[in-house]
Length: 331
Figure (cartoon, rainbow, N blue to C red):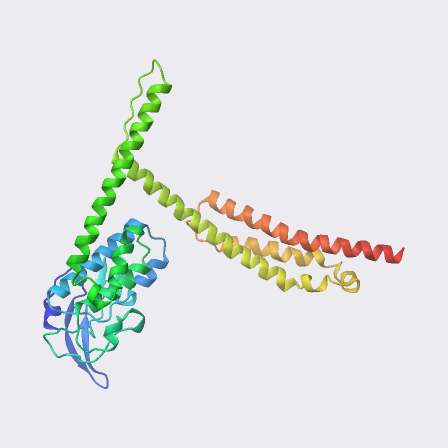
């Protein structure tokens, strides 16, 4: 605990001390962080670049406590806060923290979902326990294919796992550099192809073609932003379709439009009932987050209205067919 009280790391919560609370016993007093848990933060709209930055801060904090001889033993998204000011990481809750040099908590501890297999059967803290938990956390952060081998090694049996965070970071850095070299090579190749095409297809015109790594990265980021927007639109449409299905089901039309007697009974209120799903779309659109752009809302609305029309048309066709049968009977 003294080691944590001395910590000045920007990504580790400041520990002020321990105090005795009547009926509760000893409690660790830590700084107040105005923020949200990593779990809550990941539910929001986050870019991959932001998630990678947060992952790096988490790993930096863990590397620091390990260098001090401390094993957290309960790493999980609920024990990682993201501050509202600057969105920086704060690793918290060192209530189960231990060190192989200190006999503080000599029993298995942690949260089962994030606990390494060996942690359940031994009371000896090991930095590789935290590395396993880190692997689970990184897996949930959707960091891209570059992190996949790192995560797999974090989750390997203890003897095949990284022995420390520095080893993990070094391997990740090497892989990132290799990937950059490959990407740069692809970009250069693409630029050369474009230049050759321009030279062969355009005569008498001098064309300056300058494709920089920065420009290409901007294009990639724009594509990621567009992908994120498309994902949000698709999710909003999916929720809207479920609502339409639910409203149409609640009208009872699917069950009642099966016999002539029911059709005769329902014909006076058929379109009133069908209108309920249309009204539900209008109400649903009002609940969409304010940061949806006008054209995005229009796309969602048109898609839902089209889907609603298709669902309604099936019932209308069924109704008309039964009404024709009814007309033939009374003739």
